[in-house]
Structures are given as C-alpha cells and as structure tokens.
Length: 187
Image (cartoon, rainbow, N blue to C red; front, side, top):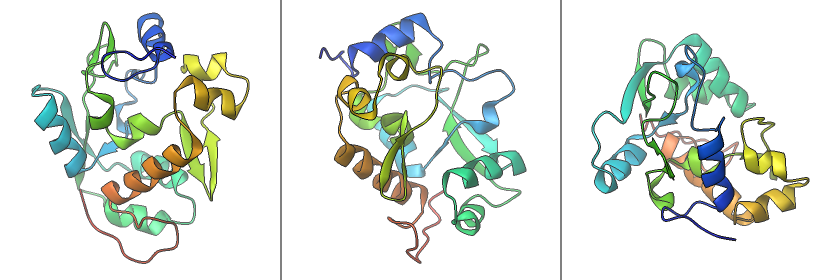
C-alpha cells in the first residue's frame, strides 16, 4: 500500500485523476453535499487556510429527507439539528461540481483534518455493522470484491470505520449511538 502526501491510498489518487470521484457532485445537486459541523470547519481552517472552501446551504426539505435516510429511526433528531429556515455549512464546489479542495494530486486537506464523512466514505454503519455505499464513482469500490478487500485497499478496518462514524455523530450533534437521548445543536 502506497500513501500520498495527504495520507490517501494510491487508489484514491488514481481515482482523483481519472474521475468520476466522490469529491464531485452533479450540477444542481449541491444540497445533497454533507454538512460540516462547526468543529470540522474550524479544524480545516486551522490547517488549510483557504478562502472559498466553504458554502452555506439551506436546510431544504430535500436535504433533510436525504440526511434522515442515513439515520433511520432518528428522523426527529435530524430535523431538530437541521430545522427549516436555517442553514448549515458544507464544502464548496466549483462550476464543474468538484470540491474546492480537490487538487491535481487529490484532496488538499490532510487525511486527519478532513470532515468525518469524507474520511469514512464509502463506508457507513448500520446498526452495528459496517456497510458499503453502492457508489459507482468510487474506484476502490469498483476494484474490490468484498468488504474486507475494500477495507484493505483503503488502509482501514472496521474498528476505525466505527470510530469515525461515532465521531461524525458527535460532531454533527447526534448522540454517540442510536437511541441515546441527548442532542447537541452543533450547527
């Protein structure tokens, strides 16, 4: 396994050069970019002093519905965190839909500083199980035939994915595990 300067596996570097990637979104789909918590945004700003890398987005009904799908059974908590009429930060994209932090050598944000969602992708946690998003844009996903191969390809493991998922939940203001009662409005 070869890692790039920012800590990416070689497959992520190849993906960023070949495209399509998880770092691009179709025009008009910006509302489906994942939100950034205040803490994630500040962490990026400390390490990558780049203006124009963030955008404010409305908590549109489509965005809230999309986000609720990621947290089944916690829809009311998600709606509390992303109320109508309010906004959230996300990573900005350019006119082609590419993340403003996507450079010719891949992501310009060091691995340990990136938003949790970027660090966990293409994995997610459902219940207690690590699952894989069905993503045709992920070269690592296309090259791996199993969950374990994909974990190895991206130089991670199930424990790390679960840890990042728990940190994502906390950063976004969700309780550390589904079913916990406390919500922190971190946006």
